[in-house]
Length: 449
Ligand code: S3P
Image 1 (spheres, protein in one colour):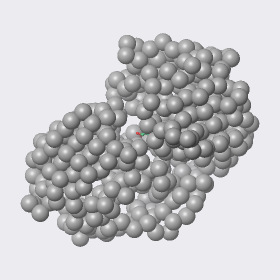
Image 2: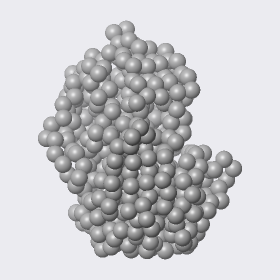
Image 3: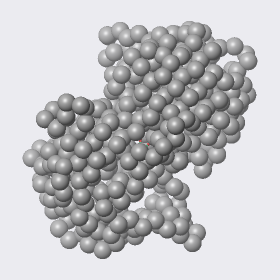
């Protein structure tokens, strides 16, 4: 394990480019594999999670690398086999830490008539998979899972898939995407009803590859997303913007560390992902979006932040889907704000890479912040004008990259350094986090243990 220590710094300054969007990278590799021809991906996130999807795509018989497919200029090439054209993997697919990878690929495997077994690390093996198996069973797939519906899981895909209309019981882009990907190799129309809007990268990319996707507002049940099955997807060029969920860490750090001015260039600002920007602005943050443009069907901008005095607010449950991965770093911002911040509607945080609600409550308490935790809320009493957060704790990352990065941000403004026990976990989404932050002026050091 590599422990990391983050110490208080005077100021953060400069421009940085965060790595590519994780959600879009997974989808680009998977849809590239299901298209006919050679897809080229610019800006793919080369992190452990995404390289796991790339290895899985290769195991399904498409060529998505490894090195051979990474071009000298850093772009990636995927030779697709067409919808329904994947082949049975010869071995278990180890999806590491990635819930997105395994849930999306379970959707793909469900409507290919062969057997696929997925495994994962300790964190992924504890996460709920019934949420995807339920609708995929209705489409005809069969599953053998460990008690509680956990990995390892074997999927027996169906040769005669049935299209379904499925209303999401939880706001989850992964479940929506799993059903739509299963719907690709299913005759007829597959519909997902989404009571609360979640990230729509799948819908945008399906249309980009040539599928027919109709999105309608339902009478009172939310969005109806209907995919016409068995389209011919045509290989395309995909541009992956910077990941706003990664940009969130230097953004919040730039707001908290005194005298800072930080710009993150080329970040995806899909409106279904920008809940953190809205929330921080409500808290008083100076955040500007510059050079707003559309790239590859996704809105992109440079995000400029300046040190700001933040005020506590109430963040309603309706905000959660648009910033679901940003609560750990928002909790750090709240700890440094003046007054009380109430985060509501957080039940889903309990089933992320770790129980993030419990991890933030414990870590902040250990760092000297007063918090109250219920089943789905976190109330944080910001120290604001009362001086810096004491810090000085060692945080257990528990295989959760975002917990690790959030507490390293806290260390930048805490009175005493904050240590995380394992920094390696950050490679799942943000390779180079330490160098990028130190390049802006942070003081993060690592020690092998
Ligand atoms: C993701 C959806 C979200 C998010 C995850 C990525 C995606 O998960 O937390 O990091 O790429 O679809 P849920 O669908 O479980 O909310």
